[in-house]
Image (cartoon, rainbow, N blue to C red; front, side):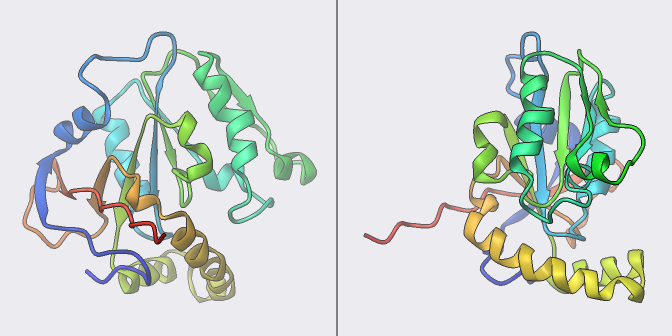
Length: 219
C-alpha cells in the first residue's frame, strides 16, 4: 500500500473481528449517559469510508450516520467545521435530536434536512476531515481509513466517471494540503485498511494497524 504524500504507511497489519474494533472504539464502561458516542470515520476520498460505515451500522443496529458531504453541500470542500459543530455535534452531545439544514441547502432550496433522532447509541461521522483537530473536543474516538492513493483515484473514476475529473482535481488540490497540515492519522483510535491485502474474512473481520506515532515537534 502506497499512501498519499506526507502520510506514513501504517503497519504491521492484522485481521481483527469487526466486533473487536467496535469494542476498542467504545470504552468497556458502556454507553454515554443521555447522549451517543461520537465516532469520526476519516480518510481520503475514495479510501473506503462509506463501506466501512455501512458495516459499522450493521454491527451496531441502534447507531446512525452523518456524512460531512451533506454538511458541506455547495458550501466548501473543507471549511465546514462550524456548521458540523453547531448544527449536528453540539445538539447530539446535549442528548437532542438533530434537524439541521446547512447553508448550502437553504441557499439552493434543497429539500429535507440532516435528521438524527435522539437516543442513538453511536453516531458515525463519515467524511474526509471528520476527525479534524478543530473538532476533537466533540469526538470520542476516530478511525483513519488508509488506502493506496492510486487505488483511491481508480475508485473515484469508476464511481463518478470521467465527467467528474475536473472536480476530482480541484478536490485533491485542497484535500492533500489540508490533511498534511491536520494529520488526522496521528490522532486516530484505530487505523483500518481501505483495500486490505491481508487474508481475512470480509464478512466478519477488518484489517487494522496500530495508530501512527505523532510527529515530533521541532524546537
